[in-house]
Length: 581
Image 1 (cartoon, rainbow, N blue to C red):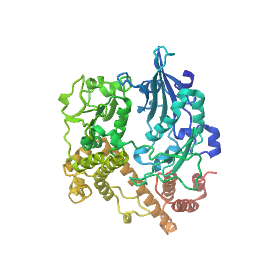
Image 2 (tube, helix red, strand yellow):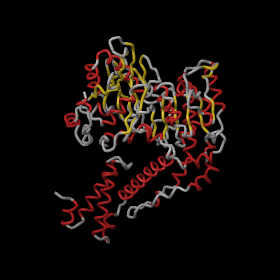
Image 3 (cartoon, rainbow, N blue to C red):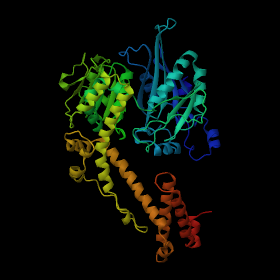
Image 4 (tube, helix red, strand yellow):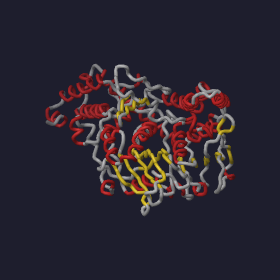
């Protein structure tokens, strides 16, 4: 199978955006499949080689040797986990430099409508794993060990776990023909379009999913199946493509949820040591989802092993720990990462009365290399006071045996409101830096966005701070000061500044198109100035047509008409240069 999975050029897909649907299908037979997945891998245990890549499908998708090695090691639980039967988990790996998939029009279209936290990964792969280990006397080691792995750049953990639950058991029984049939079915799926509800048929089942959009309300609930669609069989409705059961994931750390939220907000290095890859990957994904709708701008690895190619990079003591959240299962990491500032050790879920047994907050000096007890080992002191009312409501819900969906909704709403209360003052201050629309005139370069001054922002909190929307008390100013030094402030600021600059360009283009006296403006202008106007208008037009400027179609048509009018006023030789035949 090495011929199928050897290193080499990946499938060329960069022409998808420009071609017609018919030409696209002919040029790239797996175009629809690749809107969802990069490839499907099968990893098996070889007595001589250890973990080995048995199959990559479609066969023309190429992985580098380093990517193959990472997928092989991360697709099997660590020997300390002792996972018997079937288990699901996920991992995330870095794409190898120089081998990234083409950044094509399909990606731009999806990302322009998707929430920041659900955009396609440009430089990482997600691996969604279904691992089976069962006794088998026909195998030398006495065990059947195999993993089916979906490799994607979409963070749709719930969808791909549901998909694996359908196809993996069938595949382990029927092998390759079943996998080919499933991939062919997926190649008929519609592309994921933000805001749409899609029906995805696979193996006699129809999965109905809503693709989240950045204009969805935060507590959006997917619509019921359309009554006019007589789908047989009736669709299986997934309530979310990406959201985990937060309450179940955070069972052992409910009393420290706010401290963990602060650590995530500040981009602090954190190790999660769990008994299994399933628990480590779910805890890491739950932690990074705490910040939604804010994009998590640091690196994170839901499951990480000592065989990972970045092991040395993450464990070196010659520099400060990187801004990474690592999920691990091997206790060896306690010793190797002892210099990291925050280590969360979680055990198997145990109930203490009505509340799951809570990990304790412990000083890093209490960390033992062997037999480390569950706990959050950190010297960090939370800036905000704990929300005792939330804990009481969650405990009351447990006592009344409320559905876990209800408990998760309560917890998710709390974290969402906390993040929004923190971000809204930043958004308001940032909006105040935008030039007034009345100062944007057609024939002058648009004014600049004013610089973000941290001291001015902190002064504004007195009358427009988070206290307006959040009842929690504490050192909000101290939290903002630390946030300014984090990767998340840098990521948020760059994105907001980019969006504002695009809005400024769009307003300037609208001002030019709404100007009534372009002929009068041109009368006393040199040919150089007129040509400069044409080039700038064309540049704005290209940006707008590439969905990089938020402008209406009517504005684009007027801009094109202006360009033609201006070019028509120039001498024939210049017209020939600007409009070559």
